[in-house]
Length: 127
Image (cartoon, rainbow, N blue to C red; front, side):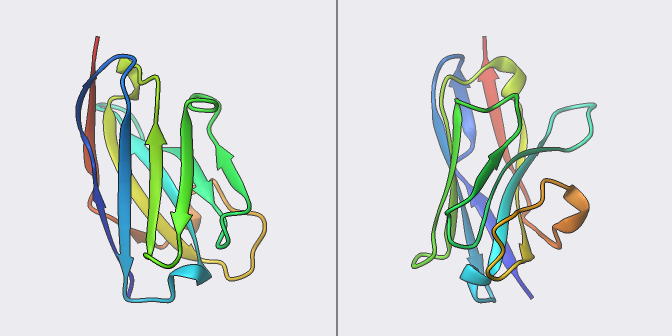
């Protein structure tokens, strides 16, 4: 069983920055692809970013490309999402997710591929 715990959410003004963290336990972290998804009020959950087991491959939704950066530290069993130039439309609950993908170079952006999920952390961007 894999446990994921997000942290780092909060309230920030438009143009500001936040860094989300997701601490993983219960598995060999480096064998898992990691992703961030978000769900805004009244909307479906959507893909934000994903990273391969080594960190060598990253993928982003068009809406966050150039503003968000996903990274991971396999020694600390943690994945990060650095969010810069935040906009009110980035307001959502952000979820960390994982699926087994040892040695994979291509990482999925499909929610259905991800087996393990955190409880989410709220990010609110004020205008």
